[in-house]
Structures are given as structure tokens and as C-alpha cells.
Amino acid sequence: KIVEDLPNILPLDNEQAKGLIQSTSDLISATIRGSLMVALMQGVLAGLIFWILGIPSYLVLGMVTMIFALIPTGGTAFVTGPVIIILALTGDYWKAGILLVYAAVVIGMLDNFLLPRLIKQKAKMNELFVFFSVIGGIQLFGILGLFLGPVILAVAVGLLAVFKGEKINKEQITVQ
Image (cartoon, rainbow, N blue to C red):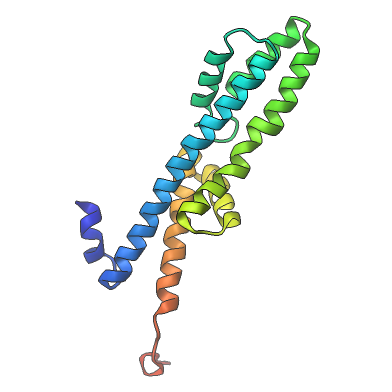
């Protein structure tokens, strides 16, 4: 109901308002889908390294990693961290070191590189802007910033496009 009333509420003409709402909706959808896809990939990659290192219950740990991967900025560390500590405490220093490097470089950084690309494909926005909107959103709003950052960017870009497309006559500008 609220979304249906937005074109009437926004100080834009109907087509501009609908375009802005559609681009924002596309970005929210792309962010959710991208986050789920990245979490799935992080869980699979974690499960794979757990299996390669011979860690018991690698499937369960991979699935738990996938769930924790939905927490931005280090969610996967809630699973890989304790496994690394246990490996080190049991004397498997090589395995602990391999998992530490793999978790930090491959699993941990995957969302920084892949999520902006996935969002960009759907939302047709500059990848660098999407990346910084996700990072900035998380810094400002916490976990909600994962979605709010790109949405704020989409609204700002949409409004700029609307204003850029409008022609202002010189007669409309008054100097006092």
C-alpha cells in the first residue's frame, strides 16, 4: 500500500517517481540475492577446505559458515576462528595456518569482491560505488547497512538522474 502511494507523495511526476521506486526495488532485490549467493559460496568454500584438511563434520561446519556469512564484516570468522584455535591447540599448526590464510584471503574477502559485482549486474550501477555503499552502510548502520547503504545510493542516483533530466528555464530562476 505504501509503495503504491509513493508516486503520489513524492514531489516528482508519476513516471519519475515510478522509475525511482523501481530502481530502488531492483537494488534491494539485488542486494538480498547477492548476499545469499555470496553466503552460499562462502559456506561451500569453507566446507571444501574443512574437508581437504580432514576436519570432522565438514558439511555441518560449511552450512554453519554459510549462515554466519550473512553477518557482514567477519561473520565467517565465528566458525573458522574456533576451528583454527582448536587445530592450533591440538598441535595441527600447519592445518591451523592453512585455514587461517584461506579463511582470511579466500572466504573472508569473497564478499568484498563478489557482492558488488552481483549487485551491479542487477542494479546497473557502478561497482565501485556499490562497494563503498555497502562498506559505508555497514559502518553507519551495522548489519542493516548491508541493505541501507546500497538503497541510499540508489535513491541518490535516481534523484540525481531525475534532476539532471529536468530542464530549468532561465525565467524560472529569480535573483534577489
